[in-house]
Length: 479
Ligand code: CS2
Image (tube, rainbow, N blue to C red; front, top):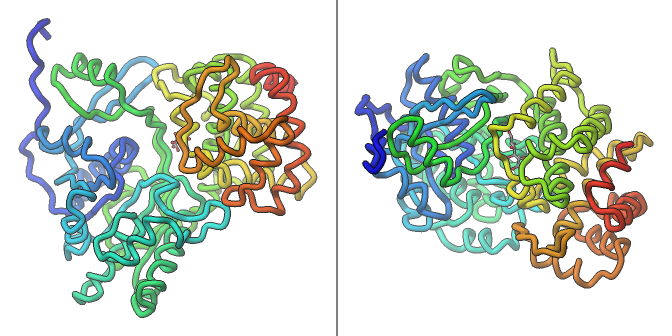
């Protein structure tokens, strides 16, 4: 490219657009780097009208960036030896829910739409992370029970299913792609909880007619930065206002349980269609997300900016291996998978220096992540009488992190729906033991019976962490 000349803008190629078969709620970078790519591949090989209408539940930024590009964007693979860009043209439109909830509901109630996919993050389900049940006191849920134009994902699902039932249409399949255990079952429970409060006959119809397959999704996708946008422009010669950046690896295991069997040919795109995804989900949530969060809190406190930088520190490389040795005894391997080989592959993925995945990004929303990433593993180890020093340290590091002050006395920008409450509890505590006691009492995260069993070992880890700092504590815990 000649310096000084503005780059040509990326636009839609003009290839015929498929009809819309999918509405996606929560159009973040992850789904554009993952689900959209699988669905583009599935259509390339098996055809079908599986174009996607994306919905942003909060901000108009993605819509504003993609609209002038005709909804096309680059999916950029961050290989250890270079970047490769591919244009994805699978979006037919992007809607901004708060601006036009009616348009979202009518898209979801369109007879051509067979599937609603979701990536709304853990907190987007408005549930109690400790129990997995709908939080009926959540302000968004209270709003959605009163008002036919919803704001929450669960509200959109139920109100759109209500329209379909009233119009005599079949329901859509609800395909959640968030990192929650048995995510299909979970969202089914939340949808039914909400529908029962709204209209019990609707709940019975949903229960009988709708399908909620569980899925395990995996592709590391750091947030796109301005520097990424500039590099992609250099790489492709065209300006893309919203590329997505991701590692080469991708894995999607999907329960093959769709309304009327209608779905894209995901297997042709490399997805594993299975009858029960629980083993895949447990393995991934505990071994990947569990270590991700552990590295994020302990690594951030030691000043490591990214996961790659964290595991390049030999002390942390040993720590993550120790974590896997504590986690693996609780994981049942999916058939044909070696958990040791899975851990080795994860290490290589973390170490990829081209993926600049910030510890701060992963540290976000810990209150919503801890139960499925760390606490289930800890409970099973406690039941079996197995020691888990590295996992206790990870929980203690989360407690230190949500206190909002780093080891050099600087402020931490803690992003979490419970941030203010956690900070208050932490500020009121004088010692590491007090901090641990106060935070373990938050029963949205820690069921009381588990909290009681965590008290002593997490306090011990916290005392080490407060006294020695994260890096030293990691080192001593691993030795
Ligand atoms: C990460 C995940 O941000 C996080 O909490 O642990 O987004 C992780 O990168 C993906 O689940 C990988 O598939």
